[in-house]
Length: 150
Image (tube, rainbow, N blue to C red; front, side, top):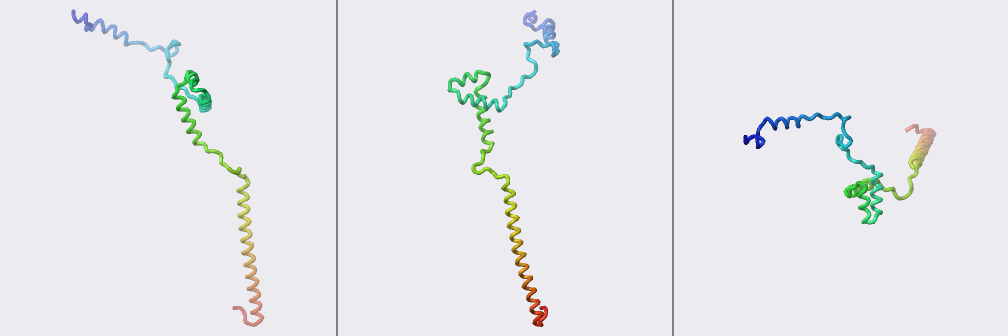
């Protein structure tokens, strides 16, 4: 009898435990509106929204940042977003100083190079023609003296 008082009897307790373990799962359509359905998703903020919030927080006095944070934000959000924005801004190159690049500059450089090559080729051609003329005169002068071709 002592075993029945202390709860060691198997018959009465096992019937209660087995009925509590055999619960029937409700179908998805029968879920009440107060029940949580599925795994909750994390909030995701666009980078433009992050920039707006960080800029707004930077413009506020120190005591009013708390009011901004009470709008379902955490202080760690601001900290992480500031670092993220600083990292993104560091990766974007600054605009180059000096003159703006001339789109026709490459063509001008190519034209100048080709003109220099043409001038060099014309100079070599003139030298070659002068040498050929000198050789012709030498040959005609030797032929006239009777020496013949060398």
